[in-house]
Structure formats: structure tokens, C-alpha cells
Length: 253
Image (cartoon, rainbow, N blue to C red; front, top):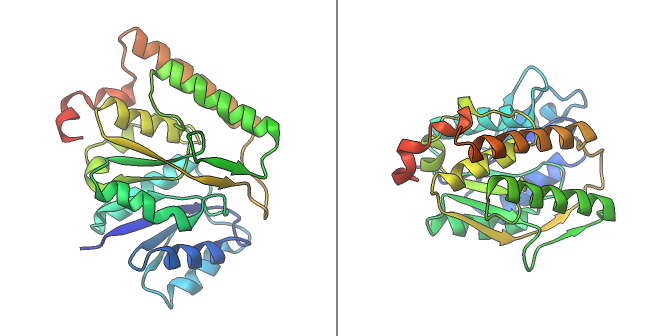
């Protein structure tokens, strides 16, 4: 039975993808990788194709075009579940997430966590190469989400995380309400409010040195709007569509 697989969505990541794959493979002797490439025009997919041709631990899914981070992860999760992986990890391909911290995440899942999250805003967590305004946006967004969603998580927006396969099987991912970066908030909240065991561990987030960040003001506005909508709906007893499915599955999470 396969153990863990790291799912990495990519779009224009040719400058970092080879090094990230090598570091992940070196971080754990058994972990596999699935790159979900959205038809990168810079040749990212072709680079991974060449690596996968010589290494059975590396796989690639080619998608026809860029269609949102959330949909890339959902596609990757589906592939991982179909192939029998027991632990499914999210990690950015740009070098901001450190593969060397992967063993600690895997241990949380081995110890029974439904969801493990690499957190920047807990003791031991930190960021590198971030200007003050990026830290302010991230910390403020996290605080706002915690308040609106009554969440106890310290870094609900973090994209360095891992799920047990059972947890993902018990969620109807097709009903998620977001396709962009706020997908991370929605999915963590879904597991948390379902009674799942969510553990956070400190990570070092390193701002990418190659390529350009995909974070835009539009992404921030979308996330704020979604969180506000979910928060008010929850307070009014109107569980958002994507959250309603969890009521009868609390015991399994």
C-alpha cells in the first residue's frame, strides 16, 4: 500500500521545480510526488516529464489550462485516493515551503491527526524575506478568519499541510465553494468544524527568490468576501452549502 504523496500544483515553476522534487525525495525515502501542471507555457511540465520518466516516485498530471489552485488540489487529491495513498500532502513548488520539514508533518499524521498544518504564526514559526506589509496582510487575514469563523487555528491560510486519506474520503470536495487561494481556508475550516483532529507545527516560510508571487489584491479581496459570507451564514444558522455535508460525518473525522 503506498504511503504518502506530495501534491504540488505548478504554473510557470521551471526555475524551482527540479530542486523542489530533489529535496522532497531526499527528505523522506518513501514519499512520492504528484505534480499537477496547468499547461505551464515555460516548460515546467516537460521538465517534470523528464524526471518522471526515470524516477517511479515522481508522477505528473497535465491539465489543459490554469483553472485555480483549489481545482488543481482537488484533482490531485482524487488521483492520490484512486492510487491508494494513505497520507496526502500539500506543498508549494516555488521553494517557500521547506521539504526538510516534511518528516514532522508526516509524524503528525502517523500519530492520528486528520489534518496537519505548517504554521508561521505560532512559537517557532517564522517567515524570511517578507516585507512588513506582507506580514501585516497575512497576520491580519488570519486574525479576521479566526474571528469570523470561530476558528482556533493560528495559520488557517497556510498551504503547507497534510491530510489522512480517510479524512479526504469523508469530504465531498466537489461541493467546495472556492477555487482560488481561499480554498485553503475553507478546507481547514471544514475539517475543524467537523470535529477533526487538526494539529499545527511551526515552519519557516521563505519568500520565493525565483519567479513572481501569484498573490494579488484580487485574491485577498476574494478571500475576505468568502470568509465574511461564511462567517455570517454560520452565525445565522445557515450553514454554507459546502459545509452542510459534514453534519452526519462528525464521528468519522
